[in-house]
Amino acid sequence: AQAVLASRADQQALVQIFRALEALAASPQNIPLLVARNGLLALALSVVDSPSPRPAPVGRGLAVLAKVCESEEALSGSPRVEEAEGLALVTKSLAHYWNHPSVVIPACTVVAALAKSGGA
Image (cartoon, rainbow, N blue to C red; front, side, top):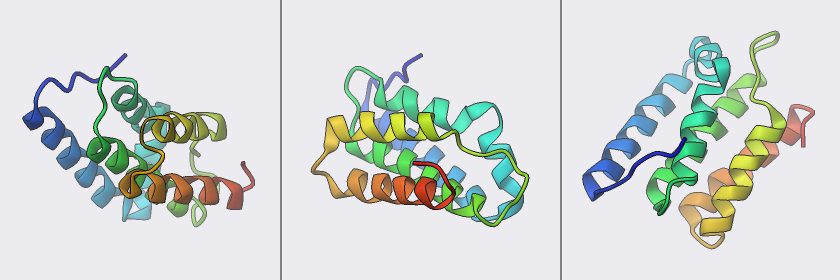
């Protein structure tokens, strides 16, 4: 499935959704909710797979995933971000915006967090 980002308002709304999810990710108790059934990854991938993804929503999706990956380290026994799916999101995101700081920085954070947790 792909996110439909027909207008600038759609893109701004998606950025706000990702910001709200990032705020939820700040609390370790919410991490299992965010990684259950790969919902966060599915949303972020649908944005990247959309016909014309924009850097702001792509970057915010990666930022939320980075926060979740970093928070997972503190939680033992909680659901985890699957390494392959996290790296797929990073790869697809960088394929579109390899030189955009709002995408590259959180992408690097995701890779580092996955590597630190025994992944990548």
